[in-house]
Length: 296
Length: 262
Ligand SMILES: Nc1ncnc2c1ncn2[C@@H]1O[C@H](COP(=O)(O)OP(=O)(O)OP(=O)(O)O)[C@@H](O)[C@H]1O
Ligand SMILES: [Mg+2]
Image 1 (cartoon, rainbow over the protein chains, first blue to last red):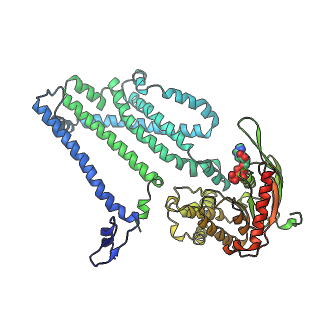
Image 2: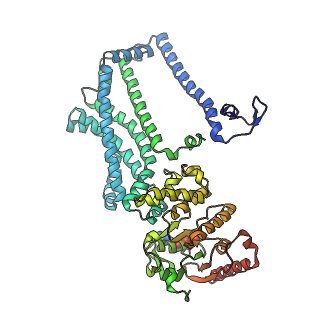
Image 3: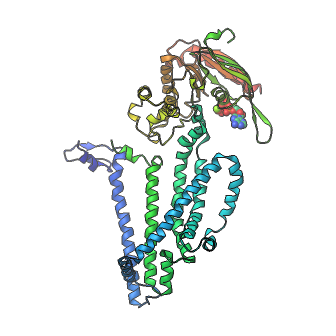
């Protein structure tokens, strides 16, 4: 039987193929791919359609009631502003500034959170002294620190980077600590029974077991990083997307404000997608074994 | 066994006692004055009520816990090194990010000893465990019984002379369990490792062992050591013979009397 007929038969209970032979139900590994695809494509299409529908309604309402561009710009006005922004390069250059703040700040947060998590989980004294303090400082709303950081580090990039790092640090740390502790005691003993050193237990067990938790933290932190950068720019800056929003608001160019929000959302979505994809790739074992099984 | 000559003694336990500290500041006695010597190549089953210290005993022998008093010595024909020991746990405890083959290679990887020979050995083990087609699969693609077989293979990888097994078939259904027991006997028959096998199933204990160690409820002491003088190779049909039934009954009575004595 060719793979082609097999695929046709998949997903159905039992179905006569052209030559009259009946094909029994196959294991779900083979049959669920086409079935799932059939189901999934419409869902996305519907979402897109609904989104476009909303845009159309928005456009119509704005035009019908002749709503002022200063209050709510029509989607077409936002689109024009977006195109203009990219054409004159202003959106691009400000995006680069904000991206830089986000990436550096996020990087600092990831590095310091992971190192702290290792120290906290490996050394009792560090845990006893540091962890309660960290939990306590976690209750401080981090955005409230942004003005202080501007005072201390100026309106340049460093105050933005630090705000981002501060905001992204805590969810990362908490998740990483949970992650490094998530390995079952029995697993540790199993490795010890083979003579594993503490470092080896760390490397072969605790780090891989922590990865799913770390990525859960990264997903939250990367979105918070975008927020952190924009808030810090609101408080005091001369460039960046947050600055651009404030400047547009000041000149009542609300269409541009919307355009910047669109760009910011895109930045957030892309960064989040990168993290999710990296997570799927690195933490392959928690996913369903469909990849390995479908190669049969 | 007092008559055993020291030359082929694999493990000797001298008045082992174990006290665990409790949260409330007191202590729990898990083992009390356990003495036993195990011959090289002997298959010993250990039975006893839950909480009597069977796992504790294996953990002490393995070096995962330190006894409060008493001594563990490994016989002169054995290297005293811990790498002569292999442990199989109640759960498979496989590392989910490693393929079956790489799980088997856990021990050589930890000792930076992965080479052509260990790969060959891993292949042999896969065949022996009936998993030759699953070497490149991940543990979550295996059934519970298959995972447990990998766990056993992992302990066999560095070819230990002594195998400590703590209810290795506890999580399996009855049919798989019987089959795994017989498979284990086959493996054991190849090079007669010394085996300490903890189980809750008296028939299983009898079917596999040369001697069955019966323990008392906490604090765990040795109630008796029962000889199983049944011929080998053993088969599942052995279970229906009167001799087998007698031994099972004897152990059951021992456990019952110990239980009612408390
Ligand atoms: N780490 C520990 N701390 C304190 N008490 C412990 C510890 N480990 C075991 N114990 C106690 O020691 C006793 C013996 O435990 P052990 O796990 O050796 O029993 P077991 O015979 O293996 O039981 P089971 O058949 O249920 O596995 C139990 O009463 C248990 O409460
Ligand atoms: Mg136990």
